[in-house]
Image (cartoon, rainbow over all chains, first blue to last red):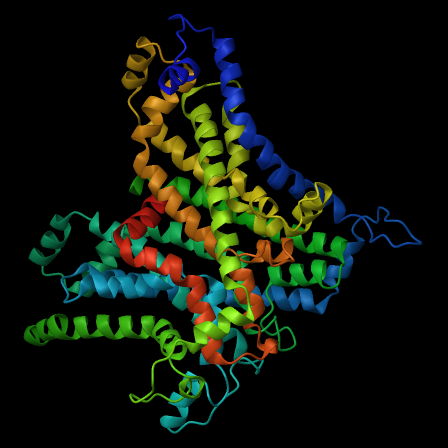
Amino acid sequence: MYRSLYIMVFCTKKGPMQLPSKNHVHAWLLVMPAAILLIAFTHYPTVSTVIKSLFSKGTAIRPSRFTGLENYQQMFQDPIFWKVLTNNLWFALGTIPTSIALAIVMALLVNRSLPGRSLVRMAYFTPTILPMIAVANIWLFFYTPDIGFIDQIAVWMGFSGHNWLGDPATVLPAIMVMTVWKEAGFFMIFYLAAIQNIPPEFREAARLEGAGRWYYFRRIMFPLLMPTTLFVLINAVLNSFKLVDHLFVLTKGGPDNASNLLLYYIFETAFSYFETHYAAALTVVLLVLLAVLALGQFFILDKRVHYR
Amino acid sequence: MKKWMDVFTNYLEPVAAWLLAIIWISPLIYAFWAAFHPGAYAVNFSFSAPLTLDNFKEALSQAPFLRYAFNTLVLVTLILSCQLVLCTLAAYGFARFAFPGHKVVFALMLIQLMITPEILIVENYVTLSRFRLVDTITGIGLPYMASAFGIFLLRQAFKSTPRELEDAARLEGCGTMGVLWRVYVPLARPTYLAYALVSVSHHWNNFLWPLIITNSVETRPLTVGLGIFGAPESGVNWSIVSAATLLSVAPLLIAFLLFQRQFVQSFMYAGIK
């Protein structure tokens, strides 16, 4: 019975000719459910964020009114905004090249024969599947002054303890180290796949010509890995703006905003200070940054696509 | 010189690989150490430290982690099943129907790859409160259910399916939905597996949006429960936080250890497409 029902629902007999207009109706019906949700949670909020950023915050006495670029003026005079923006820039600069370099090293290390290779690969990849919030919980202990893991090693080696997360000078680097740890293994798998796709003849030819390993890597392998590097680069840049979970556990953006990042500041502005209109202006900055990245990706990747 | 280079590559590289691996896994090893030993041994390492499960009992009694785990399970199941249905339909529409404006609509959909729901937290919160969906599991999942990434992946898979198979099915009497269900979906199985693994691990680990939209034990997923539990101001000790951390990552970690190959390949596959 189910089978006949199934045939009735899915395989009703149709004539051999289908009118294009009817096909279009089918297509629209197929696309519609996803499109409605995407509009409701991506396009509409994007537009309403931009509109909201042009209005003032409404209070009981004074309703919200159009104020043009006033929120943006406030933003440009807000030292915390500049602080989180530069922090985000340093965060991106500090984590991305390091994790990409480490990812390549890891991929090269596990690409050759090695006792316990799958274990090593697993060790590199495991941080990727752990939630950032759990990772932060573990690393919080590492960074605890005096009794934490890092300070214990430092003291054992003759250095003095340090409040890594409490000192504005070390808090951002400390968070960067953790982020690199989290992301390098994820990027490694893309390099691993790409390296395995390089024809072995290249290496053979290079060896016959007397090229050393470093030369082979620099002049042959690395250029061939360029599309992977670009892909990873864009992912890494996006992550550096979107991933702020660890701040909730590690620092809450402190001390004195030394580790605050743009998205976390948006969260604080909207949900701790309830300045939603100002938060909208901050979100517009983030949206513009991402749009620039998207366009960059579009033009750069399109030019490099012949590498694939 | 040449000989020294060989020694280097043959012996030192594996050592370096292992050293890096040990450094990389040590935070997790530490969490295990702290979770399975009494609190007094959390900061001093001794081989005579007794093993104990008290930290897990304590963590479970201090916060409803089993309830959180249940919420997470409901959440990822809900998101994944909706994603699979919505993305399959949309991807089919884009892959096999050249309706007017399909390129523009597709490009508009891909915007979500860049502007993910995390960035629009403020406005999405307003939308959900308008629909009275704040503090519901549906509310956590709704912004993610139509996934541009899923549509994109499945469209690639459907496009690479030979047209002749569809024609054959049509001759056998299958309609639009019949072709999708009997030809395209079965042939895209690897893509579905890859997408499902990536989606489940992403939403198992997601934190910011669930934190904003939930405020009760009945809806909070594991990550949010852990975030509240582990916050420094709550003053719980390391061993218990470690135990709670392990409890929250255990299901995914065990799945990963069992299906390591599939996980790695899925992440790779999803990224390369």
